[in-house]
Amino acid sequence: MNTLQKMFGGAGCLLVSGASEAEVPVGYAAFAGVVFTDDTEIATLDELIDDTATELTDASWESVALPKQALIIFSNPVVKITLTNAGDMLMLYLDVTDYVEQGG
Image (cartoon, rainbow, N blue to C red; front, side, top):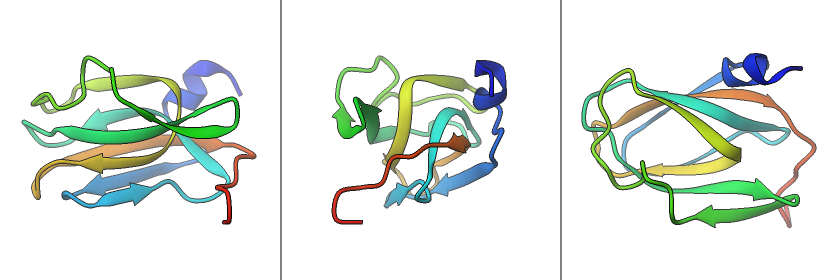
């Protein structure tokens, strides 16, 4: 699957909403996301680096009020994400991966 197909959900989508942590289903990872509500904030996310889920801490779009319809293309595949506010919404675009969380 090419990069453009990964960015637009070659294997489906996952709608993330509210302030709780959301995990991408086992066998999948998010390659991009689109903001669905104004002022959505991403508190944290875990990305795959060398088949290890690693918390991203230095992205320019983290902890920033993002506008509706903003497209975020992740540098690495994402397997876990936490939004900040109860009204936040983000659609993640998924592709398959062979990553399986340790102990999972």
